[in-house]
Length: 179
Image 1: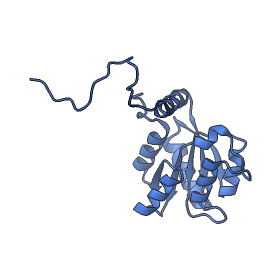
Image 2 (image 1 turned 90 degrees about the horizontal axis):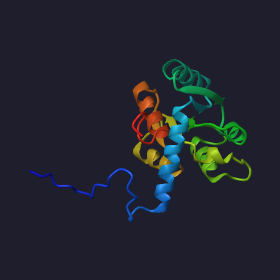
Image 3 (image 1 turned 90 degrees about the vertical axis):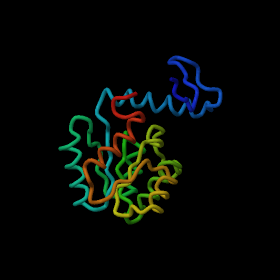
């Protein structure tokens, strides 16, 4: 008895499907290269939040529960400070509050992706995964976060399993160990 196959099976090592665009192949290749590099070292994380209690909680969660895989690189209290630092230091992941004064998390994420002249961002940081960490997590808000280039959204109060899933999905495109 044979099972129906919904799409053709391509043997390992075969050339990519002619229907795949070169852009999608290159993007996939770049993400896999990044995942391989990251699997050999701790990921550098920046936290951006204007509330010192939220910064302390998130910093502690990363230090205690992600010690084997995360290096807390920068703790920023504003979007402006984050943009200035991203012009000088490389990071692998940003955990971004949304409701901040001066520049919101949405505005900060947009500035990172657009690389505006007033805040020049290192090329490596322009595509870094950004996870919104917020109480503003309704469907419309989540769509907005995706539109400005954020990877995911984690609700406050932060549930550790949800944070772990968001970090893994953002950093490792095929799952932590399945690439």
